[in-house]
Amino acid sequence: MAGLTYTMIDTANLSTSELYGKVLCDLGEKHPEIVGLSADLAKSTKIGLFGDKFPERFFNVGIAEQNMFGMAAGMAKAGLVPFASTFAIFTSMLETANAVQAAYETPGPVYIRINRGFDQKLYESTEYGFEIGKAVQMADGTDLTIIACGSCVFQALEAAKILDSVDGIKARVLNIHTIKPIDREAILKAVHETRRIITVEDHNVIGGLGSAVAEVMAESGKACAFKRLGIPDVFSIIGLHEDLMAFYKIDTNGILENVRELMGRDFEADENWDDEV
Amino acid sequence: MATIDELYANKIILNAVLPLVKVVVEDKKNLAKAFKGKNVKIQISAVDSSGKVATHFDIQDGLWTVVKGTTEKPDLELEFPSITAFNNFFSGKSKKLPRIKGWYKIELLFGTLKSLMAMGNLLSLKKPPNKTEDKELLVKLFFYLLSSGISQLNKAEHPDVSKWAKRSPDRIYAWGVIGKPGLSAYIRVKAGNTKAARGEYTRSKPFFTMRFDSVDSALGILLQIDNMIEATMKSRIIMEGAPEYGAQIGEFMTLVGVYVS
Image: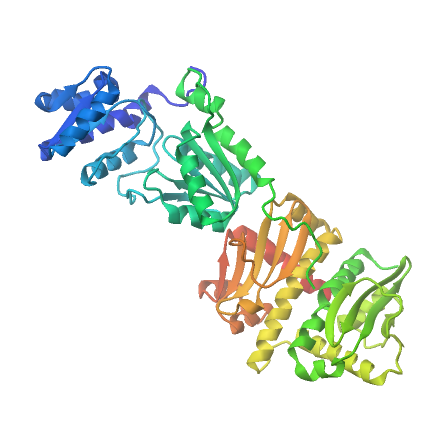
């Protein structure tokens, strides 16, 4: 199929939702207080694996997401640990495993977005220092920082490799896997050290990663050249994941195009080129 | 007629070396004394087939300002008959004195020659000076010279330097010594333009910094006494940024050294 870079062989290794269901089953065995909820998407979101294993602890609420979260809140109040699953998009395979584990260990409600299908592998094992609220630096550079999350992290890393080899541009890549709480320290360090920030997310540019990064920068009073890549404020077109990423320029080529444009922007008002004497 | 390499050297001497006289005078009280309260203009020039090239010092109430280019009525002028003669004098290849206009202003002449010699003596040292303050001054002079020298080569359209500058996005390359921010210098490069500046670049972390762990380590490299690889291994010189860009700026530093020696 046009636009796809994955093969069927990859899918067993890459499905984030499969891994989500599996980790949840493992946690369910150790922790009887865990319950599962679905809004008629048990099979697609793979929480059905948990439902098959623990039918007495699994609740399909029908196509009623708001009700599902209301029920989950009540269950949590009563001392249970509910995992409510529906669709949104995020994260890589091993990151999913870490995120599910961290969600259980974190008091209060936790919202995790994972991809329905499969994503490219970013890490060799889960031991890479996943911590809620802490960014993972995937590549270092001092020309600009690409801040990405979810499936866009792989695209950002690929773009960084091409920028280095073709353009001689050194890009730092930050995987900000937690939007809230966000890693302010990593963002402000990137602002100071690279002066150019580009955010990439498989999500609306309003109210997601780009907005959160912009808030941190605005509050700090530090300026830099900045661009948000993601889905614009429109009804998204329908299509294959990879085709949609290409259409909205959040794939490798889209990131490259936008980085090259951002690198051309001025960050310093001083255009007097006389040497200081 | 000067060769293209002589023109490059001349640009560096006029606009990167001679401005260092001001730095030396401001640092040495005994030199500054000769200009205290004075309002004078001192010009150092060379006559070329296309006119006169010069740098002049505008001294107002003893405070120096370096101005690139000529001034019409200097109080004192050291005028070389050619760019070649000018370059040879300042690179130490010739001791032939220029024509001195205003020679009868003896105090001003002596003060100027003494200041030029003080700068020349420092820059021509083969081993570090003994006094700590002289060591620091020399490192500062080298950092200023190298950043300005590279920028001047770009402005003179030296093929290698201008090619590098044209391809560069907005980047800062800096030189510094740990714990001595007053010695720092940097160069901003952007799409063919370059600007040398003094002090630390504080708006952000520079794209690349050549940082020394001490003044002695800096002089070891700048005076070409120490081995660069060994100094790097012992962390006496720390390359902050991509190593290939460190190698590139290192080549240009050497190029500046070749033109002024």
